[in-house]
Image (tube, rainbow, N blue to C red; front, side):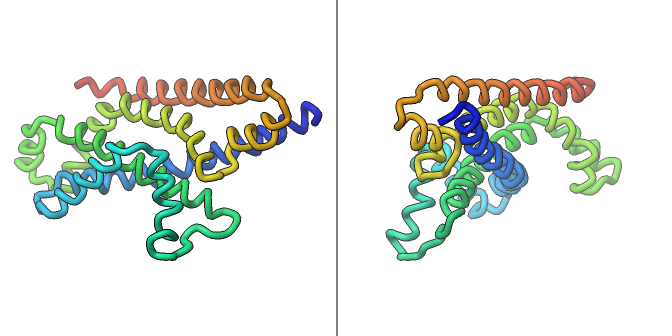
Length: 219
């Protein structure tokens, strides 16, 4: 294979990694907020359920969750949820979204609960509703507090996309192993390192920029 043919294969695999990364963020960020509200709910059954799900997801490996999502429905219920060409990608996306939503929910919960109660009380005195209090008083302070841990999780997600190869998703490591390493080509591994280093570097700069933009919220 020529250099450009190999480079094209690597780019195709990396595009799958990027797509998995982006879609996971799109769905996991709002879902994590919903789960965090459930965990903080005064309705005990809902709070207990959300906290139990988060505990299970955080306490088990992501690779195991990939296997469970992809294989267990068919083995236990004889239901093929993820058939077709894109089925493996859809299963990986579902597992990633659930996993990262649970991690994000704990970050959200910690940020929200770290806000002094006096700010809620002051908002009530001013006649603000709970919705107005959250969006106009609390939200930006929470965003500032959670920016650093969220950045760490987002960067970890970039590297975790490589785990999708465990269920046959054609991301960059899967393509390299199946089509290149089997032919004795080792150098593409160094190109994978470059792909991830550049991606993580760009993300680090972008997230650092947003963190600086929020630096005027001194808390």
